[in-house]
Image (cartoon, rainbow, N blue to C red; front, side):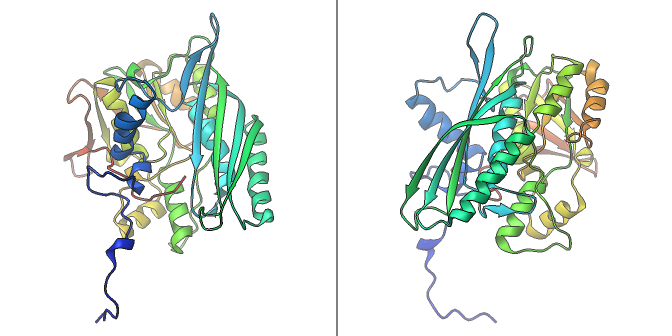
Length: 356
């Protein structure tokens, strides 16, 4: 029997998935799901003079000359803890921005690095993070060329936060965006899902699952280049970070005004991730990834694209999981192992907050 010795103080509770219609920012607004989308659509886009109907992608594509286009992206990282199995906030920040650029087909050229530091942070810890950022940039063959540092009072940050922005060059003839999906296109997943979210959560909460689960964080521009070498006519690329594969597929279906159907049994979920999700009551489809991509390609080039992906170190687990359909536009449907169907909704918030 549990005995309560003190009254419950619900004022200190923090809910990552709150009721809709909040007039305050909550953790769910940063989860990459429906709450994030509503915050962008109703608050940020109007303030910036952008149409709510604007097509949003992992990076913006800018015309800078007669035939020259660049991709531009920025991202902030508040992951907790700062170090987790297989990575840290530093290499995560580099890989994350490189991947956002790659989802437009761009070759990353340069990054910025901004730091918000908490007073009292050990210099040695900052040095470790910076070292990992530099090493990740060298592995990705991209330069960190500018940056900024700010310090806030002790107690006003969890050690440090990082912001990275990046620019990349888009090859001629490449046009990758969600609205280019077509009925009959095939949905490809580059490898096993859920590793990053579970790795961070297990380190944060001190959970053990009998085997260490490492993040899948990796730079994907080389994989994308291998795919583009097969054909420049890739229709859609998406990295399923916050909100996982579920959020990415829902975003594509809405943007393309088409439906998506996929087989749950074809989605590669590592046994350790499946066990952790079962224990914690989580859906692997909603768990964040940092080294995976979803590709939508025409059926005529699927075999060649899959072969190119499987020949690359970050695409060895590439497989077809579904297809684009004209039925149920804007809705994603999963076929279960039992032969039934279920609608896969856009996550409301985030199952595991602050994983990137």
